[in-house]
Image (cartoon, rainbow, N blue to C red; front, side, top):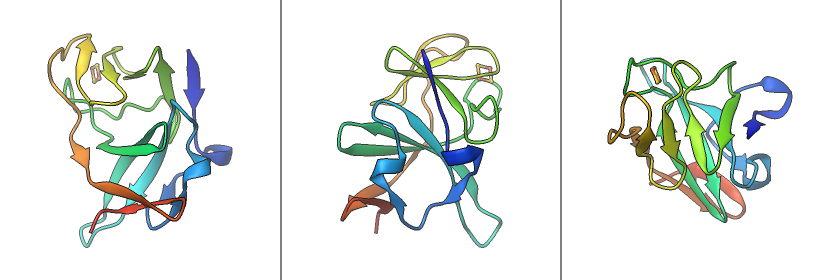
Length: 120
Ligand code: FES
C-alpha cells in the first residue's frame, strides 16, 4: 500500500499539470474549474496514460481522499477512505466493498507535451 498525494498536500488546478507530478501507479488530487465553482477530481497514472475521475464515491457520495489530495492506492486499486471500496486504477470500477460493480465518473483528459490537460 502507498499513499499518493500532491506536492506538500496542495490541490492544483487542472490547466497543465506536469505528468511527472503524478506518481506511477498512483493518484493526485486536482481541481477542475467551471462557471459554477468547479469539481475536485482524481488524476490516476498508469504508465504514460493519465485517467481522470470525479472525486466522489458511488457508495455514499463522499470524497475518496483521506486528506485533501491524498489517496490510498493498494495493489492497483484506489481505495475510498470512508468505507474501503476499491476501484481498479485503469478502469474506474469497484471490485471490492459496498459499491461493487459501480464505477467512478470519468473525466476526459489528455497528455500533451508531458503535461495533463483537459481533452478538447
Ligand atoms: S463512501 Fe466510499 S466506500 Fe462508502
